[in-house]
Length: 284
Image 1 (tube, rainbow, N blue to C red):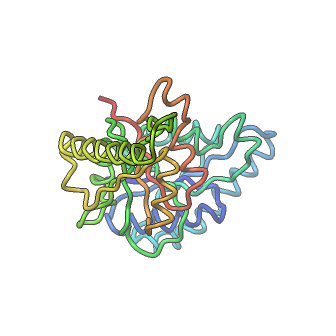
Image 2 (image 1 turned 60 degrees about the vertical axis):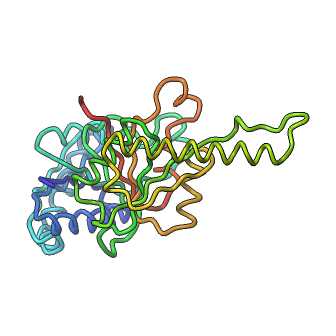
């Protein structure tokens, strides 16, 4: 990892992100930046006071940040629309990873404008690590969301390149939907079970072919095939097995299919409690 940036709103949620960012800096001995964007949508006198307060607060805590990470961060205090400006700031220097804390949940507002985090994920050109959990160790039990798309392949490669996967491999999850196996007049339960078994077999074969084609098999220690829509499958696996990091692409599904089922990345960020790495599609 060449460098990372922590985007903080100075909340308790961002404290978790700070500790994870500092651990990664210590692990990879890489430069890091701490960014706070003051929302420009407020009166000018109040804006100036807030900028001064945040700059003073962060500079007063530089020694503590340095002790956590093993090297001093560069402090940035900017003014603008937070989601838009954070994305812009990652373009001003070579950043491999943007680390953020979990967002406030305000359902009514989110319906209309989306959260800052969700807007950021849609526009960011760098991977974003959303930190939900307290930092206890390096990531030991990651889960790779594999929908067999180029986006999920890119996400898996990026997690490996960032050094976030354990040496003994991660689990890869492929969710399949067997809704085509519906009960109709004259169809017995045995036929339905047979259809579902065949669907599961085809799903396992699709995952195997995907990993082989993309040359990703070496990073996968366990392959999971689960029936159901993606979020249903994710919840089931997370309830059943310890998971400290979920890795997923942000552009796996496109067109009508994505419109119909919604964004899995958005739903995961809203609902799941593990840390989540979202990876944008490759420029190529």
